[in-house]
Length: 364
Ligand SMILES: Cc1cc2nc3c(=O)[nH]c(=O)nc-3n(C[C@H](O)[C@H](O)[C@H](O)COP(=O)(O)O)c2cc1C
Image (cartoon, rainbow, N blue to C red; front, side):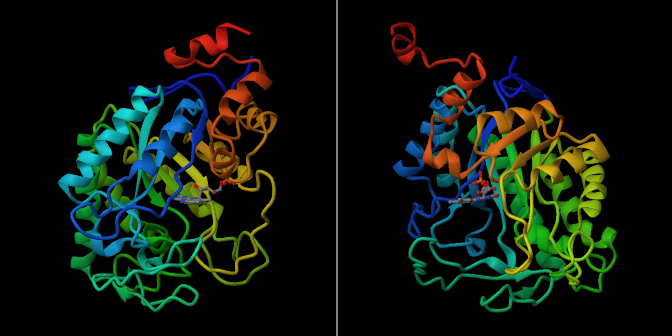
């Protein structure tokens, strides 16, 4: 019996299986005008094909909470009515395709203002603001502005409003992007947070922004629906590698996980890295799975593993060994939208078929 294809229930949501689509930016939303930040036909086919391919959850890419905080000009956004209506169509489509619709909210912080990954295109962005806990540049990007106390309250308010819009749009899972060096993660990491006020210094103070944000979002996100938090479980710096630079560690993540759970986070999506461009990351098959396993074992918090999980047997073992409750697949699902169907075949599991396609499965 495959455990990968066993259902999983969190709050009132049951996922048909534990093979989930990881959030992946497509860099093709309109960059201005009335449709700024809305999903396009490209997004619809991109997301629906993975839903029909059998993923138990499809997570819509990192979606900006304010216009001036888009990572690229091409990001999806959820700060206005029009975006909410367009994303409602996505949620309905994913539901009709038989999966659970999820959406990831993000503020890119000091990493705002990069270009498209394939041609580095940068349309003019007069409204762009790079906001961060401290004025410390990431790589070649200009240094960000340090957030004031009022600025922090504004960002938290923008996340809470976007969470309310995601609820109204019909999403059933909400994920906060607390990883990859973006704003929430940059508050956690001593690499990027040099504040001396209540939001910087000790680990408890560096966690304060994330915890206040989760509380504000939880108040807008229905009790019956699960809230996820994507974490960079380690910066791969001091404490976890030979690199002497101070960083956020797996031990810190275990402490954070307990605090998040106490505030209504239901699952930690365990990624890593992103605070410095040159961390010694041991990239290889399933390289982040041990991070998920450690956090899950130390805290009892449900986790999802992600990162170079590409083979059905590999994914099955992660679940069977209790290293995670689900796996998020990224690039392999871009290469093969029907990966979950293929994996179910390999593992001898049954996977529901859209009724429109039953003839393809009943006749050989
Ligand atoms: C094209 C692309 C876009 C991505 N966009 C996001 C994103 O919006 N949010 C996020 O948390 N991670 C993003 N990621 C990271 C993936 O979600 C995933 O964590 C990473 O690719 C590792 O998993 P994989 O080895 O299965 O691809 C992106 C990755 C790719 C390849």
